[in-house]
Length: 71
Image: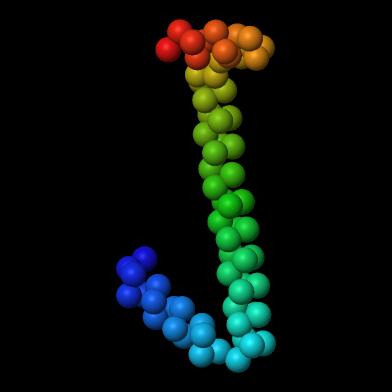
């Protein structure tokens, strides 16, 4: 988002009555939650695909630490 657009958004928000500010804040909060949920879905699908393709390593914490040390 361009800085000028963000500034305009903040200015417009500040001009709203308190009740409308509360509603806008709640609406934005819900949209952020939905965006996070969408991101989780994308990552889950990628992880499932990688698992099916055999691109996922399995092991214990010790295995993970040894693998990290070898990189």
